[in-house]
Image 1 (tube, rainbow, N blue to C red):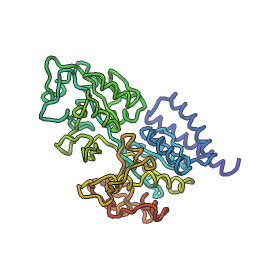
Image 2 (tube, rainbow, N blue to C red):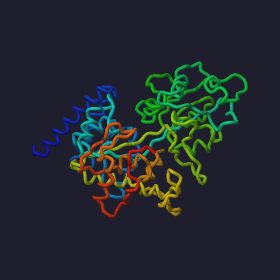
Image 3 (cartoon, rainbow, N blue to C red):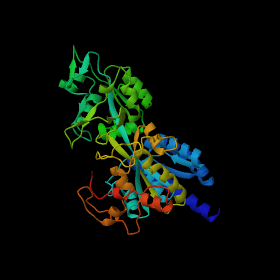
Image 4 (cartoon, helix red, strand yellow):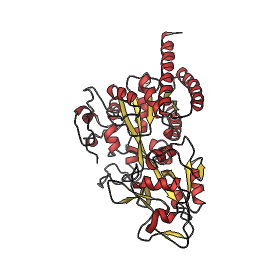
Length: 436
């Protein structure tokens, strides 16, 4: 065996040994299921290394959008990217060990990871200033329902309203809905509904085990893993069909189904729940209507960032960076937006521009995710944050300074350096420590 082959083999053994430990500790999947995934992954990884394919991995929640954009990238650039969806823990282990060129996690990656959140691997990565974090999109979840026969929304409001989730009053209510088989619509929502006759009980629907949408629902909304449900839907499409055809049903779905729900005369606009976040008293729907288009509402609380990590010393770094530059570019989506998030006119807006399949943002929207623009807090904070990362500043939201070394470069600054003249700089939108 040649020296470089021996190094790859050793790296492979180390990766899977560490990953087994991580998954065992976090009980992510059953032992039998993991063994099957492990065997398949070894085969795929071996083939990928031999053929010089860019190998990445991580969260299962981003698997579908990655399938779309990697296929498009292959058509446009003639470069293969293999995404191995073993979960967020695999991203941390794989990037740290050099097994993955980059990895994805379906959660916010803070500068100080909490206990139990793969803390050891994360702290080692953040302490290694050759590792950079980035965010490429926001994921939205919609709570929607089919009112029982004889019930309608109180005319004083546009839809059913939930209080805050993440353990708040909304979480308590959704738990009651999903765990008490005798709980009724009128008991749950009281004066929000006007019903004739007796009120129906809930028909609850969840997604299949392993679904990223289900994982988000369980970790952010209902805050529990074990609950009884009337039906398990195997896809977003199956969830939509079940709710749309069943009076008294409630479920959750990707933002990509927003127009389908609204245009369904059995459901319609008022079948999408609004959420009153703990930081505001205003109920927020997941969308705004702008020029007759249903656009993402950044104030809606049931969202999460899709986060990436990359090690600058990786053997596939240059090829991986070219792919990441394409998938992070905020300009195509920005060209479709008339206004910035603060309401000011967007200088990059182009009324003649339409997203195409050659833009990564097109595929994010297809899967119900919101692409980032240059003024988005996630783009500014994680993709464009060189000055703040090196500043040592402590703020209300960063109690421990990032304190990155002087040679640290954010992912977007690195992209601008590696591909001069190809991408737009957004220095006025660099993160300054304020959550806006």
